Length: 249
Image (cartoon, rainbow, N blue to C red; front, side, top):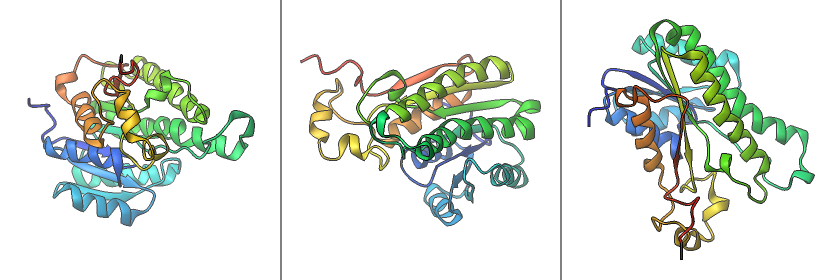
């Protein structure tokens, strides 16, 4: 299926590893130029070399407005457009009980997971998409719809991101579509606490009998970003192998 991404330019935040890197690869495989970001430019550049010849890496912390603007301006200088923005960067320093939280960890979680996507969407709108249109995809989480030990702050940030997705879709349409993906337990460093020591048990309680791979999320983001999803906006696509429903056994 042709997703209509050939010749387009996509920016993926938090793309040096895991889901972000898989998203960048999927978009590149569909013919897009891809800009990968990471806090350290050398990490972004290394990941870009893995992705392919139409990929470049740029260092930018997602809550640093000056660096974020510079990244998108460099994207325009290099490729001439910003057709797709994937707000994938996320963090979870507030792992633990709600009654043991510190303000600094709480604030950092919301800053990266919620303000980051808001900032980058604002900048993409200002610099390109407001006039030319485009597609924005946020990386939320299955946790946006769940309750679990030690993850309350992270889950709350992702629930807010799901709601933000709806508001942005309403505000920025018809020229800009805004959607989100909500991964379940995926084989990434950020999610290691959820699977590393008990992968078999997690898989056994999943209808598709495995945890997710970053590539599962990458292909879904490419679909939402492309023209085949041209009448989809304000939605959050859950990609969890059926983890919400359990094994049924």
